[in-house]
Each structure stands twice: as C-alpha cells, then as structure tokens.
Image (cartoon, rainbow, N blue to C red; front, top):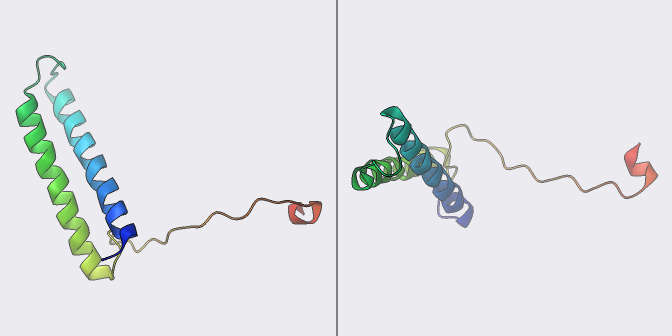
Length: 88
C-alpha cells in the first residue's frame, strides 16, 4: 500500500469516480452547464472521490497493496517481434 503504483492506481480510480459522479448528476435532472449548481456538484463529486480513496486504502490493507479486491496483476507488454522466427 505504500508504493507509488498503489497511489497512482488510487488516484486514477478517484478521478474516474469524480468525473462519473459529475456526469451522472449533470444528466440525471437534465441540468445544462450554465444552470448547474457547481458548488453542489463539486461537493458531491468530491465526496464520491474521497470514498473511492478510502475504499482503495481498505482494499490495499486487505490485499497487501492492491487498491482493488480483485487482485488483478499488471501485465507487461510482450516485446515486438523483430525476426521472421519471432513471428512464427
């Protein structure tokens, strides 16, 4: 949980949650961009992002450092084929 990778993944999740929450709130009541109460939108989306971070921390404690309970592994890309033998 104390790795840079953990916090990068946690930040990505929180930003996605913030954006998704704002999109849902804008679309749910048919708000227009100019009619929206941005203070309320920011407050609710910020709370959702905070809950996402807390969930990632809880998951990290349970899984030993992964912000997801699924224990997925990060895949490394396979090197590109450079010879005809590699392509076979």
